[in-house]
Length: 109
Image (spheres, one colour):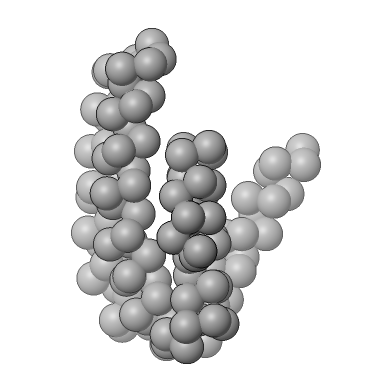
């Protein structure tokens, strides 16, 4: 059920599956913070590829912007993955929570 909801959010919003997968894996599956974040990233990759292919064939995707943002995303993903194991679980929760709050405030404004 976690996978279905995560995939639905990712397909509908274009991202956001991690905001569902991470807390659900921690709360309902007992996965620790580091592993739940790493697992969410591994799960979201194929979901994102599938969603991207659907959008590419069904929508007018601006390729220049897509490539530029993808390059930045790859660089950020590598840096984030390397930092994940160097940050305590408590700090991961704080950073993740602040990111979710910032996203919520942005959505309301």
